[in-house]
Each structure stands twice: as C-alpha cells, then as structure tokens.
Length: 117
Image (cartoon, rainbow, N blue to C red; front, side, top):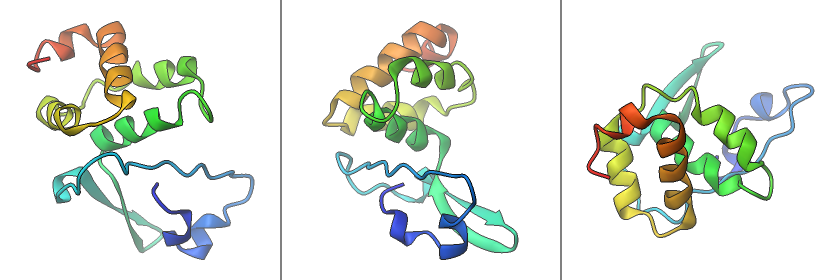
C-alpha cells in the first residue's frame, strides 16, 4: 500500500494489526488492470491486483519481511496472470524484479514456462 493515510480510519484501526507501508514507486503509472475494487462491509477500497501485490511485497524484503517469508507466500501464487507479471518485470527498474523471477523459478516452474522470461 503506497500511503497508509489513504485508507479509511475504520480500516486503519483494526485491532491487533500493524500496517506495513509498501511502495511501488519504481514502476510507471499502471492502468486499472493492476487494481481491484474490494468491498469490505459495504465500503469500497481500491487495492493492488495479485500480480502487483506480489511485486510490491518484494520491496519489503529484506527490511520488513524476510526472504523466507516472501518465499512461503510465493508458493501459493499459482493464479498470477503471466502477461501482467511479464509487463511488470519489463518496466521495473528495481531489484524486486530479480527477486520476483528468482521466486518464480524456485516455486512456480510450470507457471514461469508460460512467460517469455
């Protein structure tokens, strides 16, 4: 999430939750295909699509999130859209892209075969 302040107050104040601010600033402006609208208790929130969320997650490695934790999360990412991932990696100017490809190679070999990477 780029700016915690953009979340509604009721959402930021969930008890027992520590929010981590994750930035996707090293990417160009992306179109709506990389966003999803979430309906939570009748309130609409805009969030990152799974492909973008996975990319953004890697900006928290190694500071806030361990590489092992990220690897565990990537093990379940079997429904990512190969074209969206490929585009994100092609426009990326950061180390997140290398981490992303490394995790894909490790856990999702069959999925990675669907891309040109």
